[in-house]
Length: 139
Image 1 (cartoon, helix red, strand yellow):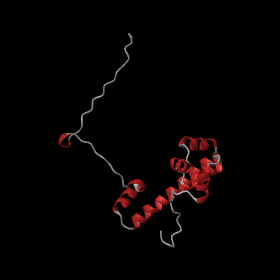
Image 2 (image 1 turned 45 degrees about the horizontal axis):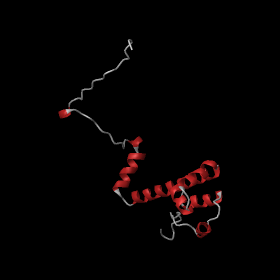
Image 3 (image 1 turned 30 degrees about the horizontal axis):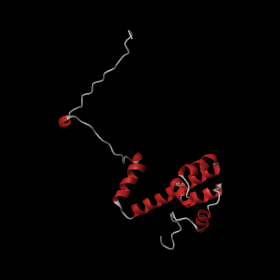
Image 4 (image 1 turned 90 degrees about the vertical axis):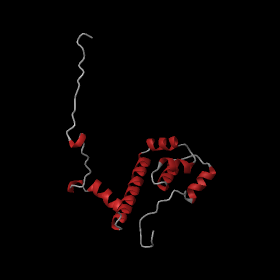
């Protein structure tokens, strides 16, 4: 990132306070889980690894706390925003894959859709036969 870019960096390295918690093996508290989730951008498995607990433990904390659920949602939104900015950077750079992806997903109302046509041999129509099974009244 250049010096004028104010977008947040993505990092999965624990901060000093979180690393200290991990070393001391203190009882896990909601705020510890919140800090790990923020540092790991809402990724539960990464947060669990940072806290040195099982993923199910972090999931249990999230399930029991609206506060933690909101952090996960907010962090995932942030990552989505960052990802969209990277996509726009690629579009601005003329990257064909990015232009194509954007138009296929966001330009549908302008006719940028992928359509697959199925035909039979030599472009002929495909014959379709339907069979309906009716329950036997004698059963």
